[in-house]
Image (cartoon, rainbow over all chains, first blue to last red; front, side, top):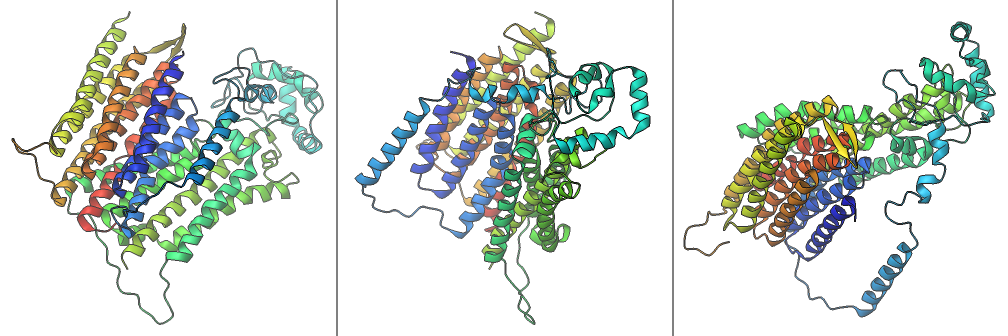
Length: 410
Length: 114
Length: 84
């Protein structure tokens, strides 16, 4: 039994115990706290399985914001769950047990845990590894090609990219320089493959082709590559879902001012009389903000991305609101501004897609962002997209906190 | 074994032992304030020992393959230790204050444990 | 070495979990969450060292930076009766 499996079994036992406790416990505060523990343990499970991006999300969301929002919900309800006589519903129990049994039966067909021959490791992955976008040895900030990497033969570029390359080749100076280097770069359009092996040795910063049928580019973090390119539409609509959540919360809970009516002055509380908290908060908010910005803009290279970074940023603002009171938070970040920014984030994401369409590509085909260097479109497009996601997530989280707190002060 | 690995091992053992005593105290002590005492103090020292110990290591061997540890990672380890040194006591302070305000009374000798 | 430390800390995690489930006051549970947060930061780092992937540390930083905010929110709610 490998160490990963051993740690996994211990952790999963703890997770199961916590889950049962969450259901059993009657105090709602306790349930909120236990769900915090649940998320900590799940983050450890993800780390143990080396799925860093998931663990990162779990840490960013479960570590701070989800518990705060749960407490915000508890503000509107009771501290204790109502006692109710419960009777075992045998029919429901049977259905549940059968569904569970069917699910477990389904897992029997799955590949063994950690099986190197599982389809997920083989299906299209060789092609993905084979592509060259974003992999230039020697170029700063980019990964060297993996050991034993050999270019794929007979690479056919799709039509659009051929045109892009024709444009690129018009840059005569560049081409001349390369020819001078004698790296056989002439076959850029049709036979990309043989140009590439040499290219890595040369280590120049020229643009790279999109190989046909690949994951539409390749940035060092494969997860971001999958999320933002391979299933970019999906991620876009996830962002739209978050935006919709924020919009519906505003529609449901925000107090509206009728013309000529003056709302009573908002009451609020702050913790500024507590020196330790105030100083700590002032000390730490810059760190949290900078780390959030780093996570957003670093998403295509390391673990993290727009969702995680946006939540971290929102946490900093919520901390500020907790310590200094919500009116102060509104002074820093007016409600009107968060509303506009939430819209702008979604627009930035879809705007990148529309822009590539206007440039003659498909929706979210990042290669068309900059025809002079299609290969570099991936990191550029993904950074823009991550920023869109990050802005929306951050502002919507702040809006949710605002609305939960506001309703309570009625 | 190089000197840094020995020091790291010693620090890890010390840190883990302190951490375990803290957990045991959290489980066994009679009331909230004494539990707070064990958990709050041991955590800070244990994390410092463990992170400093790990920062001394310059390569990790897994299945016979040696992976070098980036100097940036070692700086980050010290950074995490320092940050935890600030945040963990703040959190402990906040809990204590909340409990005091809510009227949780300290345990006295002779009472049944809470 | 790292693996042994990981398992020892997992045992500690179990003890904390028992305290979190037993309670009895809500503050014991908050304390348990806090202690678990610190242990998680250590465990994430150790797991990175166990598997030779030290870049796991970024996640530890996130926890360090944001996990104490929950406690502040609870303090505020108990002291002032409101979150805003």
